[in-house]
Length: 474
Image (cartoon, rainbow, N blue to C red; front, side, top):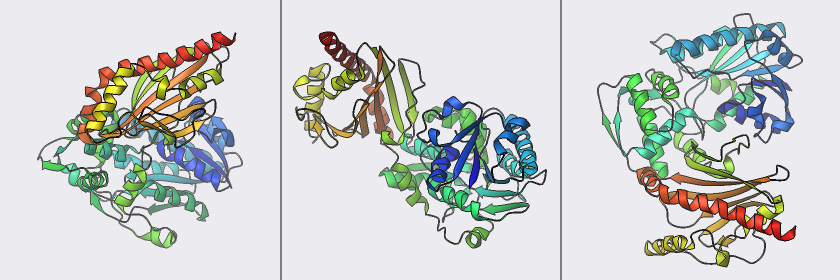
């Protein structure tokens, strides 16, 4: 089937495209900035149209000869009025073009009882569905609650609040009833909607198998992570103040947190069970099962590396992991840089070797493996031990990922990449730390000054080893 996907750089869209491709569909996408697609592995398998959903000519070109279009555009920046206006304007323009091209639209909206006092965020989502159908386009509107998956904003808010705050101050919205849905189930509903023969505007409510409060979502997450958490109810804490609180204790910006928090003032649960008759083969998972699957993505291999970042040093928090990136331009070949970082450890050492030995001694005191002072001769392979690291992934002349086996309050990895640029190539060194609980956060920031010295020096040492090898051969 010929399919167009919008909102493809967002969370749902970026996960939907590879599933559609795996199912054998012919996929095209509409984006404003095609550079944002360059680090997705599937980019070479799709057709890219550049344009804004509010531009009728751009939308008409993208919809030409497709049968179905997924509308996954959702503005989250700015004030409530601004993102509502942007959503409605884009939806009306897209829906008009879809109607004139006889294209069916599949739209992922939000649960919420339209007869109750909905928040402005939920009203906006419902109004977007109506705007898509305004010009008589055929629209399948799937209304869902919070999506549980690594990278989903509602799930990341649960993750960071639960991980970082052992005693949580909980306003009333924390105890509002919601019906979360796992990412895999949401994608299955979206893909299965392709089989619906649709005329007009049909609303289908979808959700997981459990109705919970947001507080129960946090305690459920805590149990999956082996954390103990306490909650204290407070009578007054407005959505605006709550969004600032979320921004202060998590990496989420207040501009994103506010519409999320505001939306949680309204119950978002299924009122209709029509989805069971329409999709009889889908059996949604329970919340903790979905959390368990989401936590499997707490791994650098699940992140998309973005080669477009230009700065020599950057720090970010991605899907529960603190990521530090260092880049060094090296006058050496790709092979020489790869051999340099693959030679680390054992008798070759690292950088500030006395510091690594001290870290190994402390690890032994606390029952860890310590610094084994060993590595295999020759080229590394997956599973090899390198001092207190283990090779998790290796790609010849490209990448080495090491997983720490020392005792830390969480999980840690060290990754090296080489990016070919021509005469001078780029060494990329990334350290990842997934802290477990508040102690993990304290551990990371307590050692941050030492980590900066060690990892800055380590990147320079690898560059020096590669350059020295290059000079010896020229």
